[in-house]
Length: 194
Image (tube, rainbow, N blue to C red; front, side, top):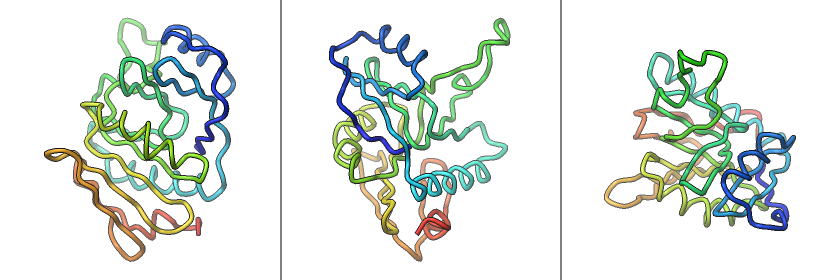
């Protein structure tokens, strides 16, 4: 999803107020420490990249406890921060397993994200590299953060290892997602997008 940060809602609100508003809203709304932002639509290339990444991750994670979700899945990053990453992987079964006591109630929020992916755009890059990056790095369950450029074949991976280490990949290389022990051809990620 192209995260165009529109003007925030006029007043600050509590987490509870945000969750009620987001539940009723036709638009996805992100929440960062009392401030709510509406998200806008995505470009075709942005959408294609997300699809390619999701498909590659789902294929390689099949049979594991890890699940891949994209675009419309709310993710709890901190007590007062909720985002909708472009792609999120969780390996915590409590994030997606239904409660047998309430079989009709399905989980709606990822609470233990393992890996998050944001596809950058001119409108969102500053937020993705700033506010969101800090929040993602502070989230104890996240081991890798992936930033994907949608205009040329360049991908950054930030890995937790004695702090955060940056790795970059481009056309002709293979993206390594070390926390999941996965490899994806960079050109495959951009197939039909550029």
